[in-house]
Image (cartoon, rainbow, N blue to C red; front, side, top):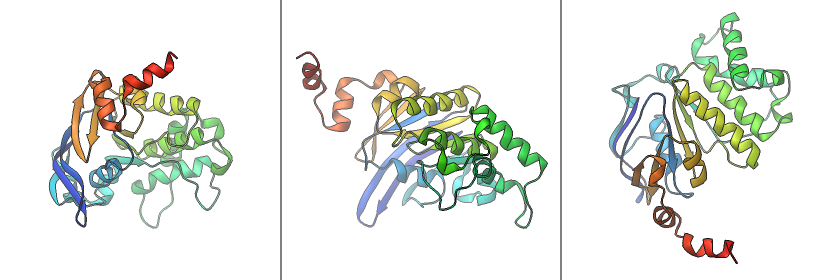
Length: 246
């Protein structure tokens, strides 16, 4: 379980997060929802221990993240970034194999156990048949599934997904989100950021809505009323709905 308690963070004099508090439970998909620039990625950096908040703390199973060694943290928490293109065209299998780094010594190579873990992870997300393909030669959705498989091979129970459907077409968005939902159902804790309310309504067990770096609402997807969405994105949904009928 992840617990964020009264977290605040600033870049210089610019306050990005303000007294953010929430928990993410085992077997739950929590969607962190808000427009671009609201502080979602900064929140994730604090959860991952990459940025130190000016106030508040992050706990992982009751232990402060700042007190956990990076190698131990990697065994508990895995990060899935937005899709990216590495310089070298690694195979899908080798990209996923990178998730086992924390399981082997600094001078050791992955062994039979790690190879088995990667094969199982690729099969779980439905892309084992792509294992010998170049990562740069597959679709955006398949790349994101590869990164999820890499996180699974890491054998962490908590998955942090930073806008995993960014730049994907509609079909690939649904495939990636369906996989995240299945993993939550299998007992993983999944925290996913998104700027799309529809994704939160369709797939999330709970939604954390951010406005101005602060928690505006937290609860099940039924909190996403027209009024709340309008406030988050500074739009008039009633006006937009009138356009649909003209």
